[in-house]
Image 1 (cartoon, rainbow, N blue to C red):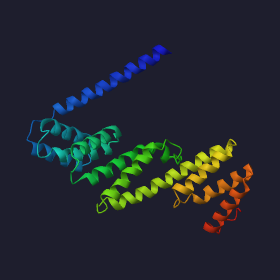
Image 2: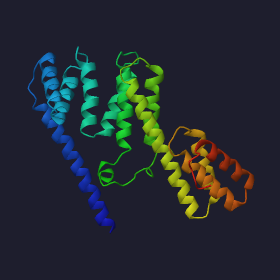
Image 3: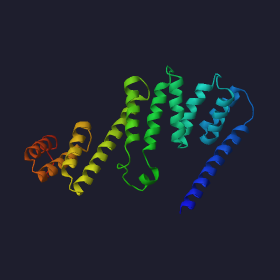
Image 4: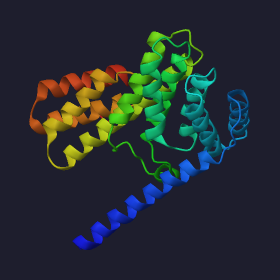
Length: 251
């Protein structure tokens, strides 16, 4: 078994090395042209939706003309191209490097916005969501990072053309985080950890008060406090439920 696993690792390492070598060879095959001509080819390729080829052209441009007039624009285009091919690691690395080297660039609103989009993409699983599987139980770290990125756009660049969409994405992510908290609360409820379940419901109320999951959070709190015999807290939760959701007929 151990030998098999080692062999698998060697095979994987060999495959990665082959991919890297293949990528370098593809870049070397790109004709030696001026920076302007090379960027024009890359731009047309990107607009045609040939993102992998565009990455090769843009990478070659950066490699051959690292301080040329198209260098920064090439890096911005690379961020988008990496995002389109689903290469989260390269997209994030390119974003972070661009921000570090260009702290006052006029397109930082776009770069920050794209970091949020990339992190948001990383938190999703297209295959599972295609089949209707709720993935709110996934690790929430990239969701929170994405939210912070969009929040930066709205706070640092309120007049940016990306600010409105960033706000919409923030609302979506908050609802996703709230739903995740309720899934954890249900997990605790099913295992008899009612205080932990109630605290998760309370967390939703305090941190996601505009979420559509507040009603369910209150119901979880009411049930949990009732089982624990914490009647004062239960009555407070019932009062809040009736006040905010008068059509609720559970309590």
